[in-house]
Image 1 (cartoon, rainbow, N blue to C red):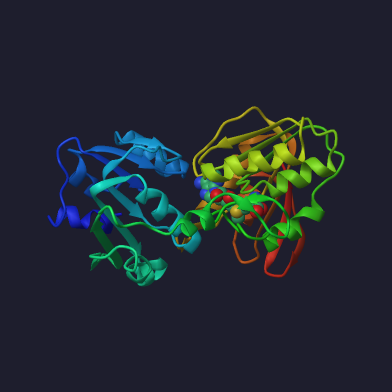
Image 2 (cartoon, rainbow, N blue to C red):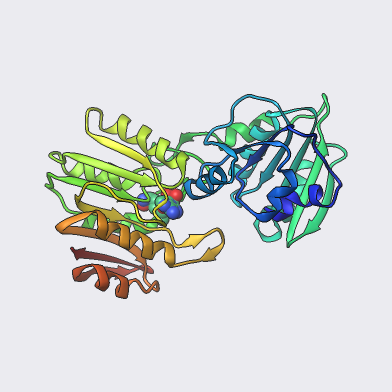
Length: 334
Ligand SMILES: C[S@@+](CC[C@H](N)C(=O)[O-])C[C@H]1O[C@@H](n2cnc3c(N)ncnc32)[C@H](O)[C@@H]1O
């Protein structure tokens, strides 16, 4: 993010007082003050980052509106189709004469950034800073980004399963191996309320609804607004009439709900590129807090991740149901 702001901090680029500026996939950093005189808005699907931006006074939306901006700044994600979709969508939100600025970490697509964009954007400038590549150009009438970049990154069907999905979501083009191991070990014939933490496309919730005809309600949580919408689409299509609620929530923080009977999860263990078990630990704490007394947790995790202490802290009867193919499946009772 600091890299993205660098051309403004260094004075290569500037925008007028109150100029509409769109931040794409942005996070709050100190350098944001370099643009504090502008009219900042953000397109940010991740709940934690969106909340931080809102607290800093930036207007946040999980979709881009067709408004034209004087500058569009894109903090590029690693996944290629997602990155191209983001750039092409953001490009359409920029007025002719406005600045298009993109930054990517050298090891997360930065290396290919100039080559990807320069055939379409003559005059593209490049700079290296903070282990990132930063490129920018002033938009002219004749410049355009490929329509295929929008097509390739939009909501689409997963080829093998028919699930709605979108590049950038976890395991967007196939069902995850850990999830495949977890599904057959989940209980049948439940009648209460189930929470799916970190629901992604909704594959676990879909399985629970299919195998538990009397299930009263399923709650799906994800920090990525795209996942929340796509899980909602998948579950509405596959289980019309069933009671499902999909909730945009950052479970790295405590999230209170009315108690549920069962929690199921394949928790994330990366924060950006760095491995972090703190996120899984927060999911375990949330699961414990959400469950009724005697409620049950089912989770799958990479075999090497040391969640046992946290599970023992919040649960009793912690049992490993299966270990293999690099994963472990654990159940525990509150
Ligand atoms: C390992 S994936 C599992 C997805 C899905 N349940 C499956 O089995 O395919 C973890 C999910 O957690 C979501 N996630 C990541 N950080 C989160 C957070 N802080 N709060 C809530 N969900 C988060 C991700 O968007 C992702 O969909």
